[in-house]
Image (cartoon, rainbow, N blue to C red; front, side, top):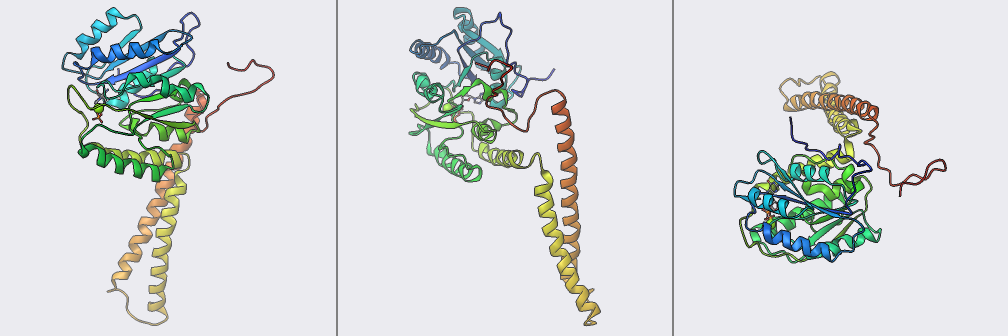
Length: 345
Ligand SMILES: Nc1nc2c(ncn2[C@@H]2O[C@H](COP(=O)(O)OP(=O)(O)O)[C@@H](O)[C@H]2O)c(=O)[nH]1
Ligand SMILES: [Mg+2]
């Protein structure tokens, strides 16, 4: 059986006899054995300051830790009824861990935070404030004064700027692990690979209101950072994925067709010109490099158009299969007002 890597089939409606949590905390972690006890204490203290209307749940997702984190989590589970632990068989990555955690949540509000004590749990109320005031559906933390080495902060600044430019989502810090969500955002989020970096973008594309709150950040005290420079390469490819998925999944021909028509058109013009040279002016053209270029452009252009048509076929098929099981993916509904049905809370 495969590990759930999407939040798609998360059960939005829990059976009535199961009491829904008012708040779910999700903590994805990898080898954070020294930090966990203090983290849990701090989360507990933060929860005590919130006037929640129901119980809270704290879901730790152990993504294949090998340092004894599992033992600590076992202890937390036994001593605190609010704790739930999901242990992966091996390391599947942060997106997978978040997806599994999200799927397990029952809360109307969900908060995620890093396990390394760099995020400050006491800020949870501040992060939830815009959602509680109905000003946002997703609130992302902004490590305004980030306590990490320059080898991290500098590439991260570039990364955030590029993402801001390309997506139009005005956040300073896309990849902050400290975020708060309204549960309906999670129902529509499909997380896999390393897409967790783009959660605010994915939510924005579906029309959710994304806000940002500056949060303090502490230097790492225990253990070591798990994300090296390779993250930025992967992050770049993921950005292409997100841009493509958000703009063109439903209309791939618009992208590929445009490229194809331009390329084909250029080739056609070039070869038309050569035909004129040959037929009207009677000059030989067989030796001209331009001929090769023209032919190449026509072939490549045709291929792009065919890619686009193939993409349309896939999109069409995907559309049929998603609408058949009643889960529309093309749009996102905030609320329905109907006279024959009570409004959903
Ligand atoms: N589930 C999961 N969590 C991870 C993984 N790598 C790191 N983390 C967690 O993600 C958080 C941030 O990781 P960290 O290494 O501190 O990254 P940094 O803060 O950007 O240096 C910490 O809570 C880590 O335990 C992973 O592969 N899977
Ligand atoms: Mg960290």
